[in-house]
Image (cartoon, rainbow, N blue to C red; front, top):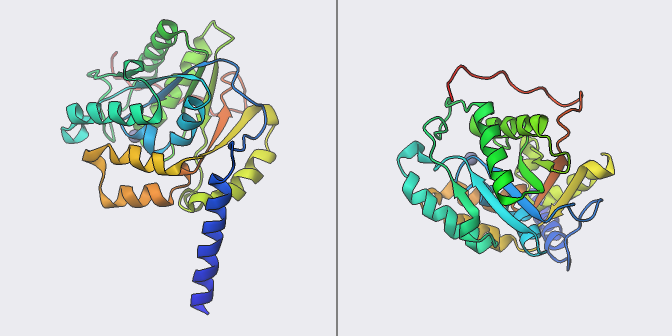
Length: 269
Ligand SMILES: [Zn+2]
């Protein structure tokens, strides 16, 4: 009986995997392409791009989009910041983002770690500068939960939201990576079915759903973060749905149904 259940689960996993990767072009729910070609991904730490956003990066870099990455810290919580900067550049090169278009900050008030709250006004200012200097049309970042609930991820979301609220450029669009519940998070390619349901139950123009044509490349790009490449992250890359697909939702900062920004911390800029 148990053997039958395990065999069925394995075959469902494999069927979903094949469905996910076998398409010539990934299924993109609605909307077609993004409106602008200059895209900025804003993340908190080196490795966020490979662990969470690689389906989006691979989709965009293989379709002529010009990708920039703004990484707001060196990930120095364990004193490995310098090493992690180099790892990020190598991973980005593999994912198709040129080294000169990856900016890694080491700001004293933006240090990696739980309990280190990042000031949203400072984040909004830094995003604004990067958008202006690179001529960005599209900004992509975490949602308000930040996939893992890490406070740095969440602050980055609110920084981008604040930038959008204060931005006078109505032609810039921002998108957030939708955080899924813990079950969906660890069913790998099987999440393709729940993603289809989620995307189809939301207004078409507010959702982009991207599947990963080359999950192996996501795995390899994460392995280039050698200082972080421990057994549980190897398992994460194999079983996380974020290796196989990303659901992006448009950020409408003026939408009253959106969660309001968290209150600012008292930390000075
Ligand atoms: Zn992170």
